[in-house]
Image (tube, rainbow, N blue to C red):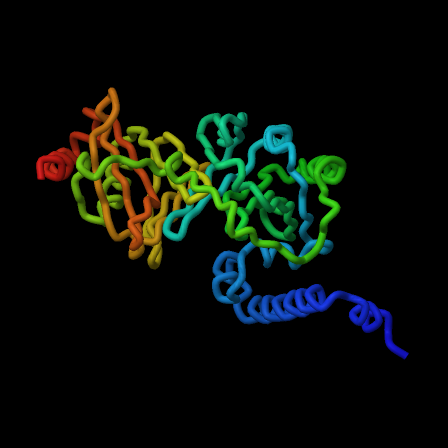
Length: 323
């Protein structure tokens, strides 16, 4: 006599049976990879396994993770503030920006904007897949939001562990989706492009080239000057920015890092292939844009005109602008 699972599989449509097999195979491969590389990040694991990061998160729905329904995006995002500060993480292939704080969110013309001591901007239709994730170690609860292709838009980690029980009750009572399947559908036709709201775009005629590794000199000078600068990291769906004084920078292996109390930034040095600078706006600020191998903007640094950093970097900036 067939067991219950075998009877169920016989009754399933062929397409569903195939999807179930793929999920089992991916789950086995994911467990094997974690055994071999226990420190691997989900994003890197997804690349190695040939899937999306959202697919890996969904594999643990019903176990550690919960799929959420955030049809009321504004209510959901503004509701997070009740639980104190979160660690907000936004990244692209080259740069990662981590800011601890909270936002007041608004939605207008399809753009979600979070304002506070820092800022977060995202295309509303990019917020497709949302999960509440649990882990046993530091930062035990997180909200992770992915676009239609399963790529992370941004993540928010609950900072105050004393709020975990209240946070879990709030999620369970308001946002748990009826769909807790371990499958993530991909819609290849609804991808948004929020990049114009993110790392900034200027006409090529207004810019001049600078060395690709100039970001290190700018950040090192900022730590010595005590002057606040603006940092922005963006991807295709969202961007995050902050204006702050930089206190500590450090190179580690292939990464260049800002390591302050409530602000961390990590930059893959070898992946920055191009740097450009322009003077822009009423304040005539210096806007440094750094690009990857595909000429996509991955990091923007804005320093005030006439300040300590501007004067210290004056030769480099003025020579670049005069060509």
